[in-house]
Amino acid sequence: MMSTTIFALSSGHPPSGIAVIRVSGDQAGAALRALTVPDLPKARFVSRQQLHRPDAASGDTSDALDDALVIWMPGPATFTGEDCAEFHVHGGRAVVAAVLAALGTVPGLRLAQPGEFSRRAYENGKLDLSEAEGLADLIAAETEAQRRQAMRQLDGSLGQQCLSWQGQLKSALAHMEATIDFSDEELPDSLDGGARDQIAGVLDQVRQSLDDANRGERLRHGLRVAIVGPPNAGKSSLLNRLAGREAAIVSEHAGTTRDVIEVHLEMGGYSVALSDTAGLRDSDDSIEQEGVRRAESQAEEADFRIVVLDGGDWPHVDPLATKWLDQDAIGVVNKTDLLDRDADLQLNGLVLTGISVQSGEGVEGLIDQLEDKIAARWGQAEGAIITRARHREALTECAEHLQRTLGAAGSELWAEDLRLSMRALGRVVGQVGVEDVLDVIFSEFCIGK
Image 1: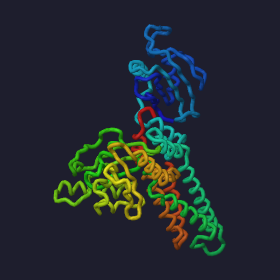
Image 2: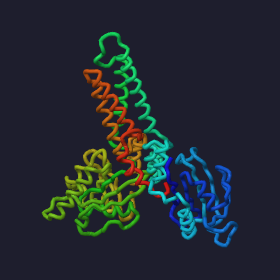
Image 3: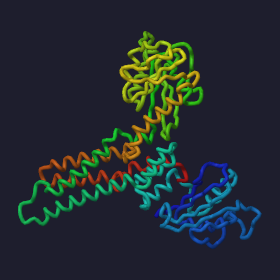
Image 4: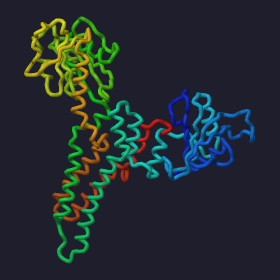
């Protein structure tokens, strides 16, 4: 248990209807008594109390802080594992400031640092490190897909899988060490069949988790969609139409967009970073050349592309644009009002979508098409257990040690690599070797959580 007691506003910044102030630590009960009455209320029941400053005279109601609801929760059956108290006060700025100031005068109390409640929950065994990261992701989730992903992590999907793998490897190690310790004959230099199969099975599962094209991390950070095409095809107008605001400058002059312009949207429950890029064409202008280079780089790195072609030039198409038409792209012909009704909107065997950004014709269909494409590709990403680079690094190291275990020539070598693989799995859930990353991880939390 920690030596100091911490407190902080755990709900959103005021003003609000209700504000929740949390206290955790050995002096939580003393803090509750100091602001209310000498006797603690019944544990885990909501009690209505008048709050006053700790130095107020007994029974003096002339300087009351608030009429509030309070909850007393003795440890260890709490979020942090420590004694906890909560003050549910009216959410005005003056009320919140007054209650926080009053708590600050109670001996042994101090304001919490960002993520300190969650860090205490981790250090007291209430959460493993991957679950704590899931909690941070849940707070930061902006879309339904991100919420579902964070809930799975908070429920322990990654941690439980790593502990399961670790248990299987411990069993294999114990079996082999028993074979060594109790063998009356020559010590075995290699793994026996049962242990080898067990280790190979874990290695196969770890590799399958790693072979996910980083979908878990991409889902957590948001998908990237690039709008590419020749100059003056309507890319910026399409970005503005999809964003619902004037995010990009639109001009009848070709080459207006010189740099990447990005907006963030929710599409089909997924977070999407939508980028407008410079028109793709050959140019002698060094600035425009740089814009084209950045556009192609954005197209290369994007999860999907919307390739916008100019209906006014159809069926002539610049090869610089058509090279991006593949399975990760949606081909669009803009300015359908300039096309013949019987125009064949096909290119390289692909059926293109006709739209008019100016009138809005076909745009809803394009949005539906993009959402379907995202869901078809990234719906499976929600099953990915790896959501952070830290997880991927640890599991990659685990796989490397397991591979060396299977190829080791002597018992000392395979036993050491097997231990190192289990240690790598332990880092995912915070069992070993994570002290250097704890400050970074928990600093991402808001104060009060």
